[in-house]
Image (cartoon, rainbow, N blue to C red; front, side, top):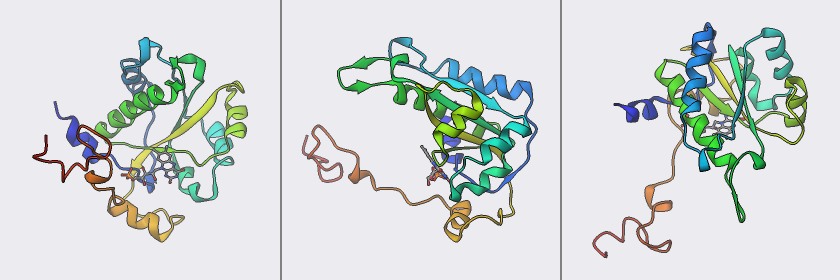
Length: 194
Ligand SMILES: Cc1cc2nc3c(=O)[nH]c(=O)nc-3n(C[C@H](O)[C@H](O)[C@H](O)COP(=O)(O)O)c2cc1C
């Protein structure tokens, strides 16, 4: 097992070259979603694998201004669900969490296969749903953009995006989000206090 290597390799890259989208690839990615965990095994996710150029081009029209790089996608995976598809425990709605976990599995598997799998939120939801025939009550949570990483920058990238192609954007330090025993204990300063 070497999950960590794949986790570390995954990047939200934006300079894409075309890649062949075979039935085998679609099935492979769909299968890892199947075995993701979900609350009471509800499996709330729905996916549309879009590889037909005509439909991809329609979707490109729904992208936000900063997502012009997506136009070089070989496939887009639309990920959608609705609250009633999953556990609702008081105010805790699990459909986004479980669908997100399953999507992470898909992204990691695509990474392992040498692909870029980049989730985006920058698209017009209702317009995209109409193009794809997704019912109104569903939330189109993300579009996962699939391609092969290109060594050459896509000319539509901003300077910040170009920087991001070569180095991972900075992260919070552990002490900003990790706590031991209690929320007001700082991770690093709590060592030895247990
Ligand atoms: C839910 C979600 C929405 C995102 N939306 C966009 C987007 O619309 N456009 C974009 O270029 N990147 C988008 N990203 C990518 C993030 O900007 C990227 O994951 C983050 O900067 C960290 O970079 P890394 O994934 O390469 O480590 C999105 C990522 C997630 C998880």
